[in-house]
Length: 218
Image (cartoon, rainbow, N blue to C red; front, side):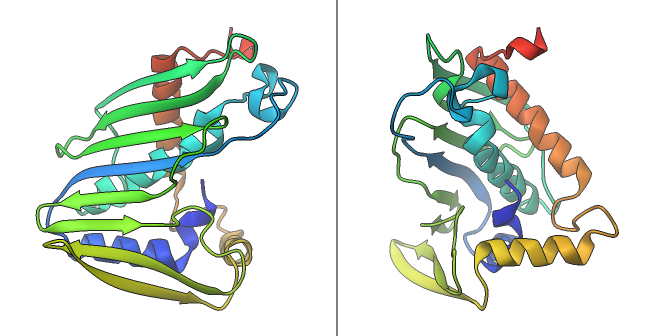
């Protein structure tokens, strides 16, 4: 879930939340789900031995975004949930989560709704609702594969404002440059180790709630 974090669009989103453009954040909704096509339990996405399932493949983005926004909203780089209750469909053959949802609560009282999956096409976006408006990110994950433009929508009193973010490089080039810049320190200033480990703990809670256990964990 690292690549979207170093994109200028996400950096701009953090700035908007930090500046309380929509007031105090109350609810974060994040979705990343797709239909992989042919049902193949040997494919890594549906393979228990390869830690398949939607939570670890794309749910990690949703959890990362929710933790990021919940933290920034209260003046921290990220925050950790105090409650996480999940539900999902675990395939009888695959024995991994094929699609799943989660309800999350943070110490500040901020709530999050997460949805992910590998066998279900959903509208992949992020919606952040605050006391004075709503921010919608239409393309939060694979933002711009090539140099170009992306946008963030800010709604106040139901009136939209479009914030355009221009990049001179594609998403993966931005990610590679960021890694190269900080590889000597072996840690990104945008995603420190504590953030990464916290995200994995949240994903473990989500899997446990859904009932996904990999054979390698037994």
